Image (cartoon, rainbow, N blue to C red; front, side, top):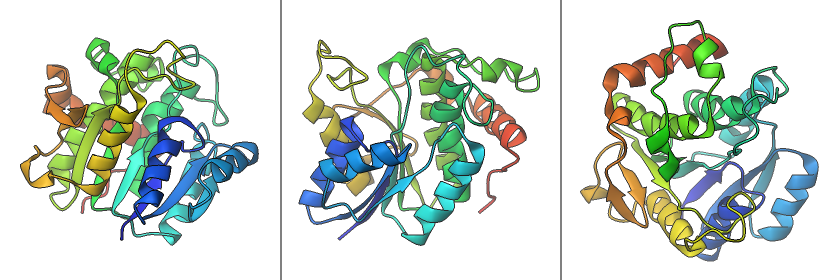
Length: 254
């Protein structure tokens, strides 16, 4: 059976996806931001192989998470699910960077670059990526550090496309789970949680992968067209270059 690593999996879609994969007989490594959330993750998904703890607002802890997760790999898929929502744009995290930027944009970049390549990389985006601003990265990090939620979700779609271009042996995808009634989405969210989980699981397992576009974007288990900005190769490369400059971690060449 397969082995999977899911960030931000102490509750919500990450936890539900982990439980679905465990129920199918797969091995799953969870992630939580602190010890209390790790206990929540274990209680929600007692069949998980391990729960790793790291605050993704810390560059050092994110690097340590990459190393710790690799020791439990290799993985069939890594699902970059961790994310924070509106209101965290200006709140500094442990490394002094804005929390939303650090968790939603920088952390998946770092983990992608530092971990051994899985068969598939899944970046969790949102339909709100369509309102995201193209990264204007010519101010030595100033523009990207003011990333808003929609901007970060655009970055996630761009990651799938940019890494798909670089690594032919890895399936890279992004996913809109819908506006679902989780702690982040709120109780009045109109979409079905199961649709989001179904799509996560489909991508993680590569069910139907032969018919998917490289760097494809998915919603309700179907490939869709994302914002045209996400497909701009120059902007993709500028995004990765700026994140490498901020973090000191370059994109591996192979």
